[in-house]
Image 1 (cartoon, rainbow, N blue to C red):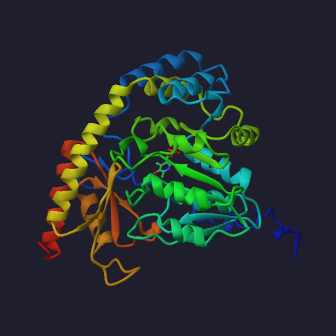
Image 2 (cartoon, helix red, strand yellow; image 1 turned 120 degrees about the vertical axis):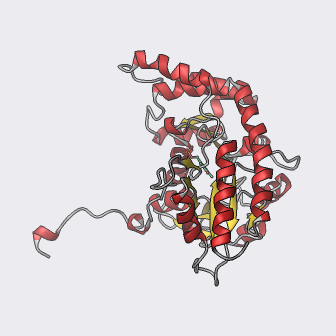
Image 3 (cartoon, rainbow, N blue to C red; image 1 turned 60 degrees about the vertical axis):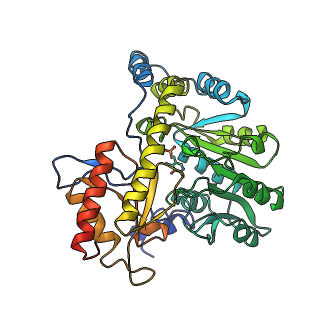
Length: 375
Ligand SMILES: *Cc1c(COP(=O)(O)O)cnc(C)c1O
């Protein structure tokens, strides 16, 4: 080999990673653009958080509090938790990566589901581990399929509950059943990015399970219902020994000062969350039934988005379906999310938007269906 061709090579697994593709944020057509591709809130950030963020502009020369103490204490008091067992991250993605980095290595396996959140696979591969993919049942996490794939190499199981992009959830009895059957050395990660939106008696984000076990971690985010996606703030609640491990490898200042200030204000603003849930309840039902009325299948969702299915000629074939619909909607200024990379080539994920955005979605889909000769 000539010296000129020698160059640094990433560790095994790194180049197997397909980089995360974010939801699109702009469209060509349409005077007005409705961004419904990343599950952001239509209500915006709470005014209290915006004010705190602006006030933080006077302290940009100072390092933030690396322990995020004030934010952790605000989260702890809001949810009745022990602040010592909370760890904050630069978005919950940061925490998911830290969990994989701390517990998964070469030769180890991490389990996720076939339509599970894309970051899990990236985090497992980046840590040098092997992702093991469990099938789902009716686009829902299947406990038995996960348990069948547990081996001596399994180190972590990642579940989003509710899941993105399907919008489905696992009743808490099922999460408990999964936990009871998992070996005690396997870490169960419950990603509750959409927990606040769920209005079901048999749902729990898992706080009690974390509090009473040594191998369960719950992650949460400020990016969705709290309306602070731009700031990148997430948090995890876990056993003290897991927080200790993550604290050793995280960036020492992984949450910025303005983010800490805005996040603290947002968590102390329950009215904003309530308004978001009320808005979502109303429009989730409306959008689901309107879209079904156009002859398209919609997976029942408990989150702030819906998964809409288009006809195709079989797995992998989206002719006349999701791709065409996505382009048609984009021309109308309605930006939605393709989910082919989630093994859902014939579906689109659409975030619940403002009243105006939701009407724009239905009007555009109606015209698309007419053009397809369906309705
Ligand atoms: C949006 C989302 C997150 C949040 O990511 P952040 O890094 O906190 O913005 C985490 N998990 C799932 C399933 C999500 O959909």
